Image (cartoon, rainbow, N blue to C red; front, top):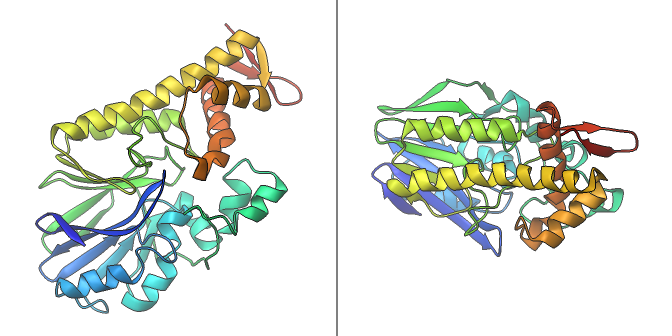
Length: 314
């Protein structure tokens, strides 16, 4: 555990090469605490409980809630185990509550995977491995909800880009933004992001602009080190530009071919080196392409033909 600024702490779990840190955050004020993102089933795990105790917080009485930015395995896999120890309500947006309760829906409904890949998701070494027991949330979050801890107020902002239920949490007094996976989710690769099938790149871009206008002073992402002051704006702009550039690239590939299916677009993306995806989660690239195409389709730039072929409309 380390202190970012007074009252705000980062609890770092293991580091996964090319993926980043598995991170939880604590907000502590007047003997009360919130946990933001419990992490995987094993990391940070008991380190979070130890961190609370070292801060003088009784894990059974002093924790007001376990807030989940979204329902992906590296963020909620440890929710049930942590709740059993600290007995605090687990909170998540309704759109991601289903994959907290039934983790297999992350595999079946949120990613473009063939049958062998779905099976392998239970055994992969990626932090996205689904090998934990789900749970029903104790509280459903909505955009604008405020959670009090001591004298501080943590505001819920529904972003819905990375996944349909993704939220960030903002403390306005000191300008602290807990960004989950919306503003950066892969360590040392600011131009890299991913979304699941429920995600939306237009929503992601709009949310990043909304967050930028808040002028946060501290950006605390889930898999990277914190960004401070002017670097916060720069990081938000990098991720927003990355989403725009990726959609432009996909549109360009479809335009060049006049029509293309997923296999052809995937080939073009990979071999053009347009977009970096670490090997540990390279299986999500088809999903990102599909979400990008859906965004282009809504904008009227491509149309879907028979047999999963998309055509450029320009």
